[in-house]
Length: 428
Image (cartoon, rainbow, N blue to C red):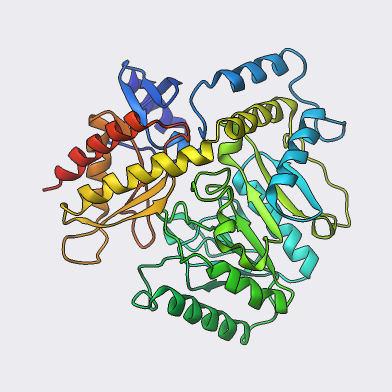
């Protein structure tokens, strides 16, 4: 049946629509931190539909909220007042840390970043954007145009002029050998130099932890130092929190808070985990930025009653059960366990991350050369052992991405680490 479905998939869907595994999986249902495939095999899920199943599969509180809302009204568009949308916007505005915040809901992180770029360029009357090398911001025309990762950027055509800044990858690049303070200073000087050669940009967009790039991050405080330079010139800071938001990093509720010494971002984008699988994205911005557009706009599907009901229930569960604290505690145990294993596997260059956002970079032993073939083999071996993880990386896809639901418990973390250990030790 799976082979039949795969054939049908290939006959009607694009060739560039990626599938994991040599024998792709059809996932039929899930519960907690586990999912099952069409053959009845159970897997521990350490990827959550690309960091989207944030709390748990089939979480009763979310399922109940969706079911009850579906029995009333599913959709009406933004042309009508929408109580669940207002209620969720109020909570997110308060949690964002942005003063006088306004919230606009979209259906995805791509659309959220697209909206943020529209707001920034309209507000600043500039189409120049600063972005980080190794970044990923979505698959729309504008988001692809600012993505600093060639594996996910199929065209160089863009409505924006994009300039790429150093700093998003701590252990690679021309400043990798420097200590943290010197690294930040060098990146700031590079930014200042870059700004001396161009017209004033609209904004810098940056992921506090680069997701598709393999869960790489700069030293804490880099974007705070950047913000000082940007603020002097009126340039906005957009924090892409599509993957880092809602407490996943454990130490902070938002990734930007590791760089918050100079204040919050001007614009924040979010998506993925807030809906726990429902299609929710959004933008938070200071009111004068959000309100700068001088033409009418609506959203047909952004902020529908059913997705907002799911988001409210999911956010309530996350806060009431302190899943940020759980990500810090269980994620800390998991990353130390994986580092202990990696120390004995020559192909592992680095285990990095924080909370339940962990990257394992695979290279050819004794070198810094990416090894995507071996990374793919580990992904397959983990699946055979009953564990689902993800992939990512910059110059080549050779980083494994570990991002379980935030309700992961210690026993499941140990089980997943043991499976990953066996998969890593299977490397020839």
